[in-house]
Image (tube, rainbow, N blue to C red; front, side, top):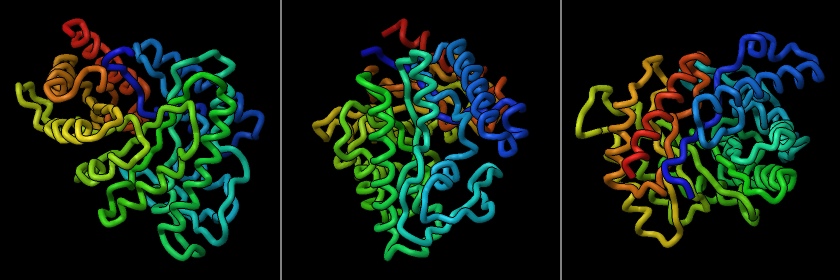
Length: 335
């Protein structure tokens, strides 16, 4: 296995020709435009030097909640509410038993399969976040609704893996809401586990961004069926050069948890801040990686942005990825 794998988290800014008419394209036309945008984004990822290309920036999805929710029965989509960064999503109300009307991401899998892409990491919206971001007007409890979403995501992932074939499919479960209710971490654990239950031939990732206490996540890690934890660190770290990277002290806590359990888990290390246009110099990112290597072995560390780069322009997003890759390559030379 290669050390210090570089990876994109998921979303990337859409080209204007797609974003400006996203909801008005007819179905056949949309398919062609989304495919074009995906191929162009993959080209940017390849030129940046990424080793793991993600899913082409999620060009087929407007945002992470509405995309799967609109493809389910039992949910009625209402108006927009704010999520973060002045970004909005159309919130849904669960009024009956939920079920999947159609696959959520099959177009993306089929596109990558046709392009003979191999190192694919497919982000999917996690069941706990789907529950937390929905109005519940049917199920008896938040836990019951989260588990229902977990069963739906299990069906989705199972079919995506079958379509992908014999190669290992990396599946990233996006759970931005995971640590927002500290008393519900068991619901997070059980619903995420339900999503991947009984599915072989996949590498399971969990992406949690901007937690005030990753310790909540670490507490359930021993019983989570997750291999790679893709987390945010750069947003909390100073941009000045320093021997002590204070934003990365939490890496030591992750290492302690990783060493306490028998299964191997790895850390996806956020090294670029997606909330600002500032292009982190290679030296700054290099320091962040080297500081983290004081705690984590290189074959258990992956390098990524804090979160998806859809909040930045395509030019800034590319420059951030390129600087990240350059820093990784410099560090790798010394290993």
